[in-house]
Image 1: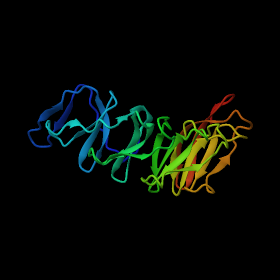
Image 2: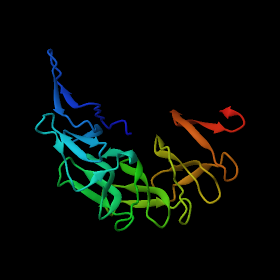
Image 3: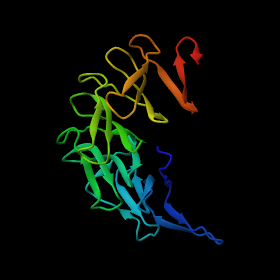
Image 4: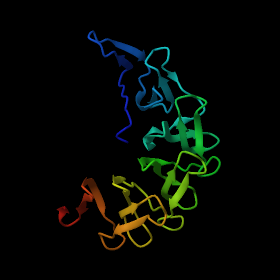
Length: 242
């Protein structure tokens, strides 16, 4: 999850602690399904295991279900972007697609129906980089590929069909940003899962190196950076970890 995404956790209840000399814990809701979320426009948006969105202003009366228009598939992730919470939302008419909320019922909207009608594009793996939202989705024609969004329907586009055709080029992208480059894991028709990079353009979305020859691909475990250098570890079948 993004490092600037404030997380709210609740195991048995949602509570607020006043930061005073005589700290006080006040229960806001007895909904035991509330377990994560983010802060948008000064309000806590809470995600329920029962798939609903809730909102809290820090009072019991102000801790309520946000909307019944859409349910959230929290296992697909979410991201704080442009003062909104972007998430994979589901309803009967559009399936599971890209939604966003500004913390109001009226401001909880479908961003784009990527896979038309009731079929689902299943957007996931949300990552914010250089004022752009990156994620993977399946439009029903090109498999699961890399998409970007500026927060509008017109600005939500397929960045590149990495594995050309209906076969998916993206599984778990393992996004890692260093400077002006976003690194991720993908595969194309020639190579297995390998390290790719993008500068946010289709032309600048390229294979870095085919580390493991052939279609077997490479298993990447950890990424970090040392200045402008990106350091990562891989799982080598014979030698263990390098």
